Length: 149
Image (cartoon, rainbow, N blue to C red):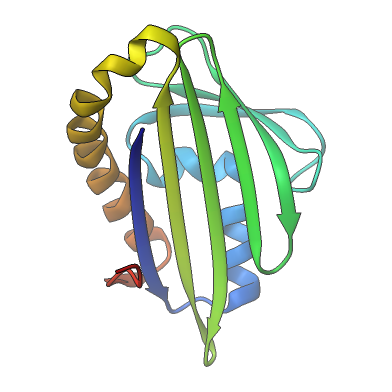
């Protein structure tokens, strides 16, 4: 499994940051690895929202299903294909009038492909750094240290 976690202190309020992050259609605005996002089920963000995310290097879109939707605190979306599983957890907390957004992405290669996890970790780190830079930009924020040990 490869994991990428970034925490961003944003000038946006908790409600604004959550509204932006909960709409997975916004992925393409900040993640340079995402080519296009189309919502295939639901109308906007919500507990039943499903998004087809076209990622560079993959032939078919990843279908992200919202598995947890708890405004204005968190959203969890999962995509599973024959080759990989992606679990994205977004949490938003208040920081005075501003907010702190935590984006935690886990990518697992399925089946025998799991043997390539060490290579994936390195590659996913570089991909994550580019996405984090975009996230900092759209949230008008700054990266802050992770709280894990």
